[in-house]
Image 1 (cartoon, rainbow over the protein chains, first blue to last red):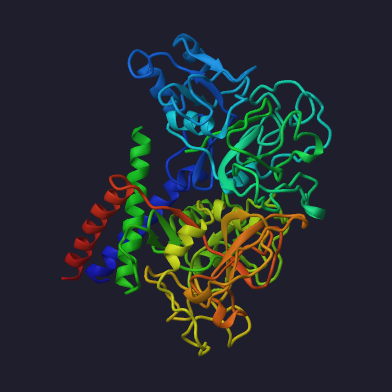
Image 2 (cartoon, rainbow over the protein chains, first blue to last red):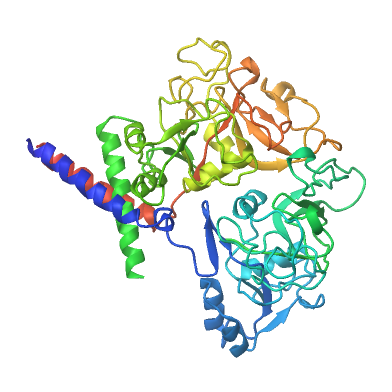
Length: 270
Length: 296
């Protein structure tokens, strides 16, 4: 064996050891593990739960430690309460002074993915984007959302306890429907609140559905040429409007990005 | 934290080995920022070849190391065969992976030369095969950067030019040696038309690019009656002749469709400077030095 052959053999043995070490788990081989508040989906870490939104007092001074925990994905409900944070978007549009167009939101409202709280609703696309950004995240693209949602049960009846919350008519709580989880481990992608994703399109004009492919709603069809505002997409359907069997992992609706309602929320990605 | 740092070092070391091995084999290695299966294109590593799709038995146990190699961009056909992997996509044989992307956990997209690229995959199946391999579908914009510089087809000589007319079926990945982009991606033009991430209302017409290009441009109009959105396709296929090209785009196919002329390639984020890239660059330099010293 020549010296070069020996080096090559050593190199390959080291490679094998490295790969075996990396092969210990799927997450490890895909890069750094995701923060605790999220699940791995392809190349991104998708929030495990729909976002709750919190106003954190003095975020750059006395609560800087809490904000750091939010950004690291380790903040708990107890941390938020201890830091004097106020939960927003539970029963009304109470994000002011953070405005509908996203002004005055920097270092003010924070999106947090934790279980057993009300997900934020009554929020515009602009405010949702700001809440993600303050938490060191962003809104997922439609494709990223789709990848993370795959495997979530497509609703038949909602049994009110474990199935996706698509028909309760009651304000949901994050992660409390145990069977409503996707292949990648994200909760409530179907039902709960419908979720803003990043994309804008010309305002669609009609819901055509998915024909025989799915009974989920599909309203990305046609293109309005007269009305103001573009449309931003929301995905997954909701617990009331956009709910029932038309909710699901293929459900796709457009709303103008300045719109807010009690059944539209979001989740973030990083 | 310490385990995470060790993993980063090990990963960077593995990438360094792959790069030096590729250099030794006199293959194109780009600028070393991406694994050998991909080319650097802006902020992403775009797969060098159209995806082949493999079903891998026991991906979480017996073949965990093979899956790790796929995710690192290091797997080769011999290793796939030894792992009992089955090449899919020469026909619609992805089941139990469903057309809407459920039960697809054993499918892996792999970017390697000289194999049949995967056709007959719906957009959902393509997305899952990328995700299982630690990648994603590129956006149309990312695809464009990766494709720029590919020859815009005139005639197809059947051997070296982009596969746009002469053969009538898909060619093996990378076999058309002139069909390479400025950044080193093969077959972006012709062979299989490629799904990208973006959806839009289903297009209704092809307006072309006017005097700008002879490539087809079918992202125009918005259907208001058919039951699906459109997912974008890029590059054209073996059927498209001179209208294939780096500007070819269509929004006329919906993401539920599986076609013999439609495939995909994947992308992954380019490592950020200061993290994997710097580790990789440093260890690559060390490995090259060691190799040179060993050959003296």
